[in-house]
Length: 321
Image 1: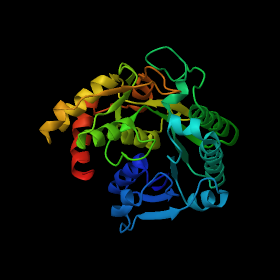
Image 2: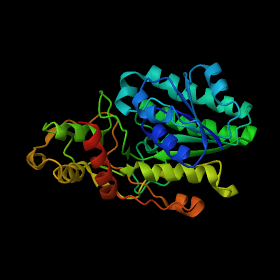
Image 3: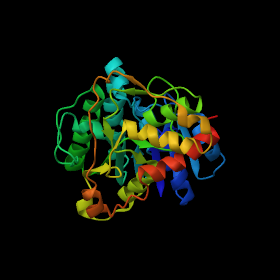
Image 4: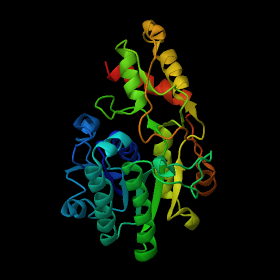
């Protein structure tokens, strides 16, 4: 297949690229390197099935160029992070809403077979119920959450109005190899790993009892592949939780990281934890029901948080020194 991955130099995008190239597909990457990295894609540049387009989803012409002769679009390009969206809602909206609409429109016009996009668990907002079920959401708690919900609304309208097939994957706290530990908006797991490897105390927001459905990258890759290959009509033009289906508190997470990192550096086991204030816009608890994906896509996540952290820690230790 001819596949386009927007944000293909990012964490999830580069992992999808690696996987689909290994399966013999032809992969085009569109990225402006605002949050993605050249080192994430360096190993693909000499692959004859790989093409890099440096461009911006906010520019219509870049989107139109990227989707030429493409069968499937995996739209991963976005400005993530709740705090970033609170600090700069305008840019977040330009990328996540206008950029999304540009890509969706270009894909429609190019007769792309299916548009698979990164949605977000932040869409559940102030919904109290656990586990989170796709059809029950609350009010958004951040500009970022608003943008990701608007993506879902646009995808649904485009499916109904223009007939383009869409599938949204609500990612729950994805982690794994190539996830950037640097910068003000780094995800919690690589940030904690980097701090522990430097023998610095990780800072937990709040008392550490907030919980998340941490989801290893290989589970996410599998969900994307299932979204591409499904021929079940009921499985298309809808949204899926993309998660493991279990939750871990931040205190438990740091405990696991210290345990697994101590296999490489025994001093890490004695590092203390610092507690800071809760972050604005954070939801207390997140846990996905994966029943819909299991029933309609045959999804069966292989990596628990323990399994994923063991693999991730090994990669971090070998690559982030």
